[in-house]
Length: 141
Image (tube, rainbow, N blue to C red; front, side):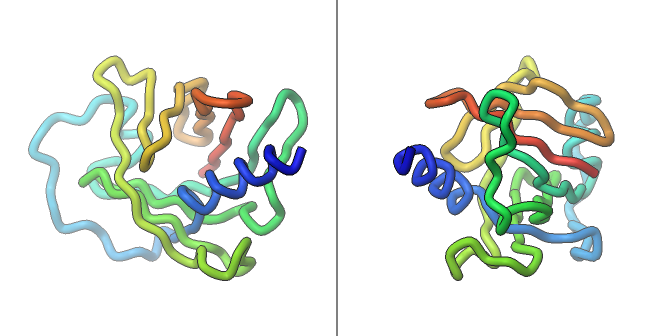
């Protein structure tokens, strides 16, 4: 069980953090037509998502310190993660990673992690990690 929490903590440290819609808009303008999925994830500049849950089966196992962290997905494929006030380890106030979407739009890559797209709407994004316990990560707008 401690290995499970260590794995979740590692993923949160790797991907954790936050930002908000008051983040300065990105200056780079789209040079291609965005797909509907890209529009949902990042629009033509950026979108901020709240990290709200990690499901293992039907149980929400997200650590309290990570709830509602802001994840800013930018058009230039950078992901900013900012802690909203409660740190999990004291070092996770801001992180930056790369993100990308597979050509078939069924997979999202964040940092070194790979996630299957389970649900993608303007209000909710559900991604299933493709390793270990196949945890489901939930983000809301």
